[in-house]
Length: 364
Ligand code: UD1
Image (cartoon, rainbow, N blue to C red; front, side, top):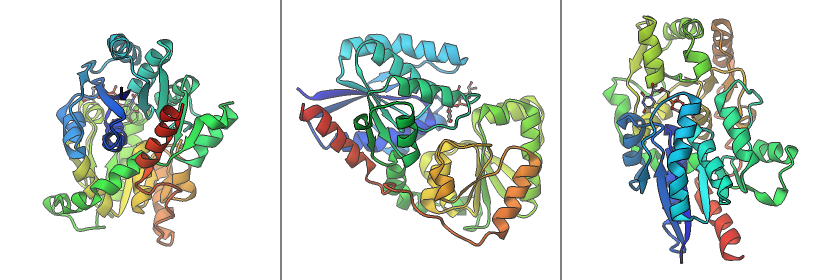
C-alpha cells in the first residue's frame, strides 16, 4: 500500500512551497499525497489563482475555515482536521512555513501520534511579537522530520536540542517554484501591460500586522515610500488586510505609488523579476529577490532568513520613515551586486525531499 501523506496548505505563501513537492511525489507511486486546504486564505486572488498558476491538484479536503482571531482560526482548523487525520490514517502530515494552518495541523497530527514533517523548519527571527515566530517555535517543538531551507535553520534547531539526524538540509522549495515558472512569468506581459519598462520601477508589498494594523506605523512607511516614489514609480499590489486599513483610516497614498489588487503567482514573479528594487515585509519575497538577484529592502527590524542578507540581495531597512530612507540612500550608493545564491537554492529541493522520504519510509 502506498505511503500516505496529508499535505496541508492554507495561506498564500504555502502554495508555492507545496506545489513542487506534490509534483515530485507524483513521480513515485509508492507515495500518495492527499492535499488538505484549510481555507485560511479563500479569496480567488489569494488562493484559487495560485492553485491554477502553480498547476496544483484540487484539494481532496477543503476545510473552509476563513478568517478570524488567531485562536478562532487555529482552533477551527484543528477541529476540522482531526476527523480527517483519524479517517485517512496517514504515515505523516506535511506542514510548510509558519502560518496558523501550519501550527494547527502540526498539533493535531502530533496529538494523534502521526509523524510531523515540517518544510522550512528552524527559521527564527527571535522576535516573539511576530505571530509567525510563535508558530515556528511551537511547530518545531513537535516536528519529527525537519526539512531545512538555509544553514541558520539547522543551527537554530541544534541550539534548541534537536537531534542532528532529524534535520535534513534540503534547500528552498519556494525557489523550485521560481525556477519552474520564471520563463512563463517573463512571458506573462505584466510589465508591458502596466506600461512599465524593466528596471524603471519599484515593487512594494506590505501585510505584517505590526506594519499595517496601526495606522501610525503605516503612515510613517507611506511617507518614506512617497519620497522614494518621487524618484522611482512604485507599484503596490496590496494584501486585503492592507487595503482594509488604508480604507478604514482614509489614508491617502501618494500619486507615485500605484496601488493594485493582489496579483497571482506568475504575474507577481514577472513584476518582481523586472523591478529595480523591491520593498517588502514578506518573508518569502526576501528569498525570491535573493534568487533573482533583485535588490530588496525589507521593511522590518529583523529577519528569520539571515542568508538573504549575508549572501543575497536583501537589506534590513527598519520600519520608520527615517530608517527606510537611510536604507534607500545606502542602496543607491552601493555598487551594483546581485549577491550570491544560497546553498541548495537550485530548483532541485523537491528531489532531495523525496530522497529523505525514501530513506525514512522505504528503508525502515
Ligand atoms: C497570513 C500569515 C502570514 C503570511 C500571510 C501571507 C498567519 C498568522 N499569518 O497573514 O504569516 O505572511 O498570510 O499573505 O498565519 N483576507 C481576505 N481574503 C483572504 C484572506 C484574508 O480578505 O483570502 C483578509 C481578512 O480580512 C483577514 C485578513 O486578510 O482577516 C488577514 O488574513 P489572515 O489569514 O488572518 O492573515 P494574513 O495577514 O493573510
